[in-house]
Image (cartoon, rainbow, N blue to C red; front, side, top):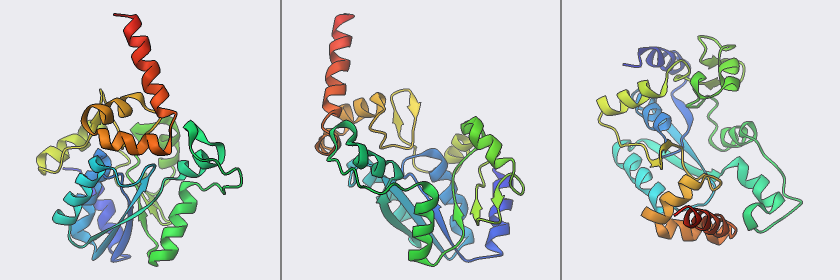
Length: 229
């Protein structure tokens, strides 16, 4: 299962023994990809980009990784969106108009410098969006960007393929927010906020502490819902 991904990973394993994996903790693509990578490398550094740090529902996945993959290392860094949120004061966040902005490439380079690891893996798929499909089809085997040392083993797969692999391997179940499958910590997603309110209220408090206007979004949702009853 996911044989093409395995072949891509094996090619990179011939070039290096240590890799970086940008890992969302609770997302299906990250869960599957870590399991695929782990047997082939001496070290896998999982980089988790958070919007709000130390959320309980994310900690469960970190504990799972630490137990199942003892040679894997988890590094936590702010998501690149956080820098924009700070600059604009998004949803009431403490504002700093002088905040420097970063993108994913910037953060990848920063992690490379800190770890001295050059090859980086990502869970992007062509089925995710048109932009990703166009980008990924330009790479070797639609998965390997040799020039930038970035690898996308899941490029040609669909969501169902990933879910089937997770079930077959008996891996931890990805988190679901409402009817959507998400990588988590999307403070603009009402389904995500309702999930926290219903299942992890302490996490919601942490989100509101950093983004106070999230509470208003929930109030407006409740108000509109009440009008339809």
